[in-house]
Image (cartoon, rainbow, N blue to C red; front, top):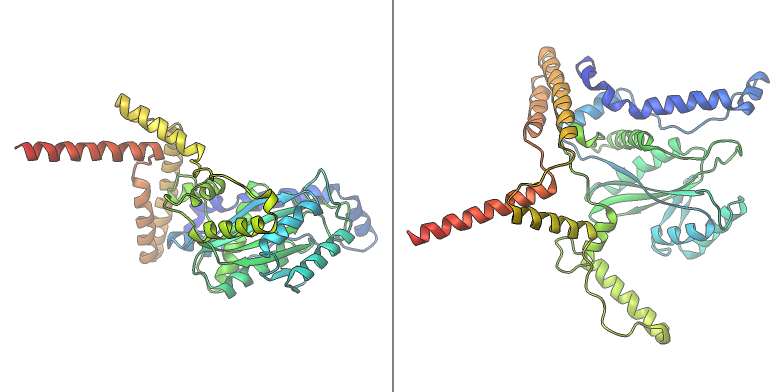
Amino acid sequence: MPAFDPIDSWFEKGFRIRQQKAAKTARGSRRDQVRSSSGGGPARRGSVNFSAGAKAKNIKSVIRKAPEVMVKITGSSSGMSTVKHHLEYISRNGDVELVNESGESIHGNAEVRALRAQLKASQIPDESNKREFLHVIFSMPKGTPEKAMREAVAEFSREEFSNRRYVMAFHDDTDHTHVHVCVGTRDIDRADEARLSPRKADLFRWRQGFADKLRENGIDAAASERRHRFNYRKPEHSVVRQIRADDPKSSVFNAARYKEKENSRAIKASMKPETAFVGAFRPPRVPTVYQGLKNDLQAAIASGARPLNPAQEKIEAGRKSALAGWSEVAANLEQSGDKDLAKQVRELMQAGEKQPRSRTQELYDTAVDSRSRSKNKEDSQEL
């Protein structure tokens, strides 16, 4: 859609990287050259197939403030000895169904063990100095329909990982509905094919592909960069959140997980009492990043100087650029007669009109306002 031309480059990053990789591989693959000269075509390389007008649909979803998809690499396995633990985790020790690249269901500990034996037979070593499997998670807000979520991830994986081995597992026992995909880095058919090694731009393309598959399955979803939505604060690191989730006094305390840990600890103690822990358990940990935030805030309040945002200059430049892009889009939409969508763009831009604040600055402003209100209240009581 011509109306979106001013911001077209925002959503091109992953596709440019993909084209560059494909061109480089085509030039350097001797086997493909031999196959081509003998009349055979090169082996098919996986890549997600986007629907017609996917980019315009995605931009419209961003404007409507549809839920943003998350695609994240949470870790990797360097061999069978480490992937064993990940398969046990995503299958919840055999209680959750796994689905492989052929669409076959794997359920129960016996079938998970058979899967590991099959992977080992395909020359996957117990230990390696290279990543043999990537742990990828596809996530959406809680309440996303299970069927649509499963279908979207399955369709994406069939296309993007068409020449890899993988298994997927659906989970809805946390704050977000998500699907784990454990995908092999090796090509199934070709030993000389480069291993799967996605970069940041590839992950953005994966996000766009996942959002497109969700929309095809009836779920409105978007994939965009935070700065283009005027969201400059990075999400909380998963490790930090897990630490906070174990603290009963925390706002994100996970009671179910805490109880499960206690039960697991009790079972292990009853089975092996000689190795059971004896003594008081340590108090909940305070994440180092939160302790540093507390120290910075206390120092700023004591000095009476509002803390600086080290990224302020970069954020300001990005904010002005994003506002200019969205402003052009709104003008184009109004000119084409799409008043409703133009209005939604203007509403989106309102978030960019506000001056961004760091977490420390926000806490400092809140503390100063609270002190000011308390002082005013005391003065009024004296009067």
